[in-house]
Image 1 (cartoon, rainbow, N blue to C red):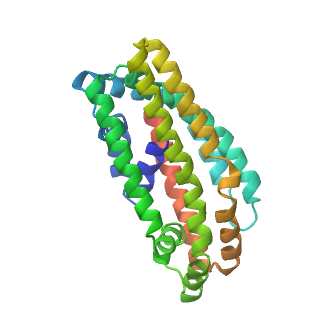
Image 2 (image 1 turned 60 degrees about the vertical axis):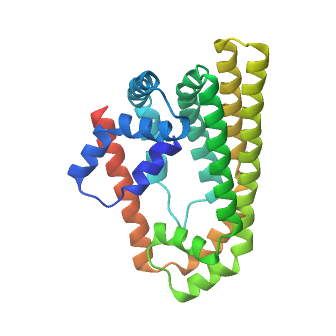
Image 3 (image 1 turned 30 degrees about the vertical axis):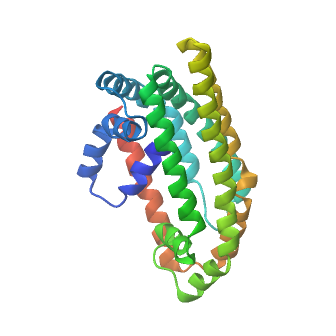
Length: 262
């Protein structure tokens, strides 16, 4: 599910015709993202693409309802904790439906694919750790500007003053992600040592992914970031509020095209 969201967010503010092209090719784009992480064989790639096409059709109502919840969000008036908890419930359901697409394929990995997946996942984690460890305050300023447009100097100073708090919030997530990496490594090693069947391996991977999604999306891990946001909101200008609302409109357009095509 995060893959879908990241593709849409990275393509905001483009023409409707281009949106249609992206959505039409969404099964390939998502499979390609997965392939970058899992190094699929040609047969696995084709099967994954077919399964993702089915997933998009089967989950469009849930994704549409998640979007409707987001469209009701008022940056000033909505209770952020209640909103997050409601969206989290919907997100977990959609994400859990995506997990079997990954674990069914991962349970068929040969030894070389397993080694490459563990190596690449570890490398990506180290890169993210370095990014968070060495992050400058401007990193978080840029994240806020993605949603609200250009910030004033006073707003930038506020974000920079909360730098340690925001970085701590990221580090909490990073700790859980590292534990998840270790868990996957243990599952694969145990499977190899015991000659575990594919079905049993798939179930262990599925349980691990679903448990990680549940634990890594808890509100308490984002509470610090929400407190910073609450302190920032009163400073929003009319132009920044309009920028935020326009992003909501754009996301709604993406979802409407997706629902129509699938």
